Length: 81
Image (spheres, rainbow, N blue to C red):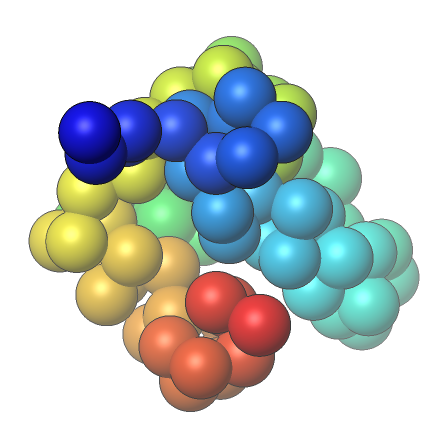
């Protein structure tokens, strides 16, 4: 039977990579700053949503994944690796 969670129980497989990329950005961007970057690009998320994404508590839709890749200037492959 198909499971919609990662093997470790997380609700997404990209959250840890988002955190890693966020911390590599110039000036070690905070979760609040990243949320603001997403909002400026049209993705309606707040700091708490970013925290839940990174911790794996929140599902991430394909539409959100596309915007996240665009804002972070990375490929889908990098997010999914």
